[in-house]
Amino acid sequence: MVKEGAQLYTMEGIAAGLIMLLTTYLVLGSTSVYTPGDTHLTDMQLEQVGSDILKIMDTPRSLTNSSDLEVMVNTTDQQGFNTSFLNTYLNNPNITAKATSFGSTRIQIKATVWFRNQSSLQSYQLYAPSGNLGNFSAREPGVRVTRLVHLSNKSAELQAIDPTAWNSMRAGPQEVLVEVLMWQV
Amino acid sequence: MMGFLVSLGIFFLAIIISQSTLVGQTTAEGVLEFPKNDIQDLRHDVLQVEKLTRESCPGGLGSPACTNIINDTKEDIRLISLYRKSAIVDITLPTACSDNKRVVGIHYNNGVTAYDESPITFYCQP
Image 1: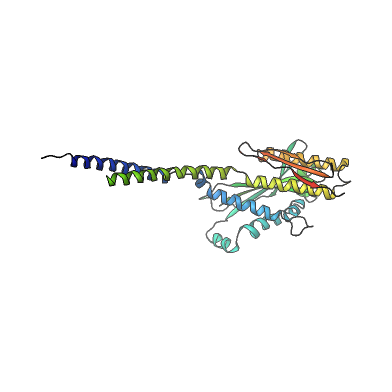
Image 2 (image 1 turned 30 degrees about the vertical axis):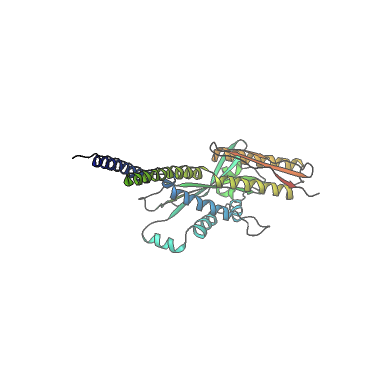
C-alpha cells in the first residue's frame, strides 16, 4: 500500500535543502565584499599619522611661544624640519635600524610650502629627499598631509635658498600651507 | 517539518548577515570621505588668526593696517583651500569689534562634505 506521507517528507527535504544552499550562497557571497575601507586602510593610517605629526609640530611648547613648525617655516630650517618630522616623531630608532639592515629607507617625505602671491599660489621646497630613494620593490602609494601655518613675517633665510619665491612672497603676517608628501619604500 | 522551519530561520539570519556588509561599506565610505583633519586644521588656523588680531594687531582692531592683515589672511586661506584642498571656504572674520564683540563664522564645502560652523562669539577687551 503506497501512502502520501513519504512523498511529503521528500518534498520538505528538497525545499529545506534548497533554502540551505541559498543560505550558504548568501553567507559566502557576503563575506567576500571588498569594502573601499579595506583598500585604503594603510594609506589612511599613514595619513592620520602624518596629520598628527604636523599637528604636534604646530602646537606651541608654551602659551607664549611660537610652534616648532612655525619657527621652522619662518627660518626655512630644512634639516630641522626633516629631523623633527622623520626622526623625532615618525620613525622609532629601533625600527629604522631594522629597516636599514635589509635596505629599506622606511618612510620618505617631501615638504612643500604654498603661499599666496596676489591672486595666484606659489610654492617652494621646504624639504626634498635625497636622490637615493631606496628599494624600489613593493612600493605603496603616497599620501599627502597638510597644515595651515600662520607666519608673522616672510622668512629671511629663504632669500638665500630660493630668491624667486622670496621675492614674490609678500611681507607681513600671512597664512601658508605646509604640504608633506609621504611614501614608504 | 522541523528541518524546514530551521532552514527558514537560518535563511533569514543569512539575509541579515549579508546586509551587514552593506552597512559596513557605507560607514567606511562615510569615514573615508569626511575631511576631519582639513576641517580641524582650518578651524584651528582661523581661531588663531582671530586671537592674534584681537590681541596684537598693529594699530589695533579697526585700523587700516589691521584691516589689511585680516583681509589678506582671509584671502590666503580661501585661495589655498580652493587650489590645494579643492574646497570652497568662506570665513567671516570682522575687521573691527561691533557691540564689543566679534562673531566668527566658518563655512567649508569640498563637494562631498559641507561643514558650517555655528557662529563663535569673541568678546573684545573694553
